[in-house]
Image 1 (cartoon, one colour):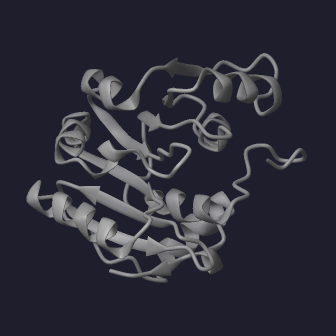
Image 2 (image 1 turned 45 degrees about the vertical axis):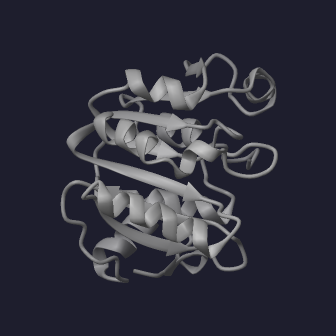
Amino acid sequence: MSLHSPHQPVLPHLSALLLCFYYRQRPQKVTELGLGGGSLQRFFRYHFPLCEIRSIEYSARVIRLFEQWFWPAGSPCQIVQQDAQQAIKDVAAQDLLFIDLFAEQGSPDFVFSQAFYQDCCNALNPDGLMVINLLSASWLQSEQLLEILSELQLQFRILAVPGYQNKVIFAARQALPVLDFDSQLQQVARQYQLDLNAVVFMR
């Protein structure tokens, strides 16, 4: 986190995640599965103060560290301590759903489960967007996830982060235009100070 600008995305994969605004520009309801350092909480509170953003985090320790070190004192924040696999079943009508889940040994098994992504689909508005930060251990796992998204009849686009294992996937029921370095993408990057050099368009 930047102490000077806490809302500013710092890690490279965040620039890829936040290119979601190329597709969905004015979200009103957002859920994040996996709190991490709280980058999305700070970002949305700064840029979209009226947006309803909720983070679901399993680890009480992660929440405690976030509240102690990574959140401006006195600012409102909605965090639910719960297992994401169960919590997602009670989520509905989201404009954006961020899936950024990791256990000590990598992504939890249910991140490669069709039932989990069906629940994620059910949590979206008809035109809602799923934003997945995938840190897969193998090419086979990545292909497994893309097959699941295809079976659920979702459209998807994939970004890579140079020098990192992260793959960022945008998925939705609606058609998603190909991401390209056009004027709209450059405007999104300027508006939110995103680093386009940290992103490679895959498909």
